[in-house]
Image 1 (cartoon, rainbow, N blue to C red):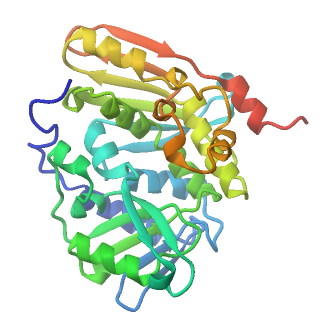
Image 2 (cartoon, rainbow, N blue to C red; image 1 turned 180 degrees about the vertical axis):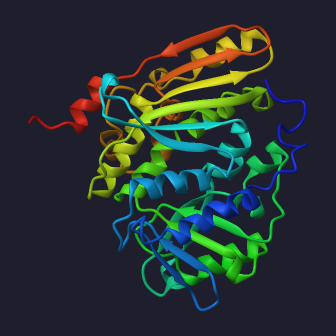
Amino acid sequence: MTDARPPLATLSLSVNDLTRPLVERLLASADALELSVARLDGGTCIVDAGIKTRGSVTAGLLIGEICMGGLGQVGLRSGAADGWPTWVEVRSSQPVLACLASQYAGWSLAASKEQTGGKKFFSLGSGPARALAAKEALFAELGYRDQADTGVLVLEVDRPPPQVVIDKLLRDCKLQADALTLILTPTTSLAGTTQVVARVLEVALHKAHELGYALGNIVEGVATAPLPAPSPDGVVAMGRTNDAILYGGRVHLSVRGDDAAARQLALQLPSRNSRDYGRSFADIFKEVEYDFYKIDGALFAPAEVWVSNLDSGNTWHAGALNMALLQGLWLQEA
């Protein structure tokens, strides 16, 4: 089923304006958060959250909130009883706007060797500046575009973007150079791992979208996932952050509408519906020769889902955490 009208068509909230105080806090606290900040000649701000700096979990939590356009709260909780000591907790009262119009890593940015004068570059951009450019078809479906005069984008990369990519961002976002902030978060860093695990709610929203659920009916979201230690190996690090969500992600969505649709959403969402379920993401990724598009799309989902229909008061539950698998992958014998 689909919405009769775009789910965000009536919203006038600006994810870039809402995020500005968070970006200012990140910059002001750079030393304490183990970040480095630099300004390019044109004034574009580059925040290194783990390439040449150590970064930190606290920085990753704040970057997670920046990614969500200032419309989500990201924190930590203790969860040893669930089989892992530290969990990331995410919540939003504007989950569609926060997760799909901002946090989702949907903007493909690439440059050839010829354009860079050396090594080719590729990254998926996430965060509020996506909504300024609105290059993805998703924005037409959502009925949303931001009009702010500043923007921030997060890139999961191990080196700064070349000037040709920065020029494209400024052009597509219609920003002056000094109005753009780029936050670089390699997954091998503390901040990078944390901000990816903080996408656990977004993964559920994206899967709901793929299933054709009426996004306008999703009104609240709360989610948790275990926070693994980052790995210095890029593929292993990426595998751990994916596994944290696929096997340790727990999501509670509050929706409106009819019970049949809510129940179906709960049944179809969990990652165990995938034919690839049950193996580490790193192993699956290597098996398909590092081609994301060869992985069963049903795998990209949280492990456990609760869906509550606010119109009827009924709740459905499906899926389950697989902490035994995660402990086998992450935990060493003492």
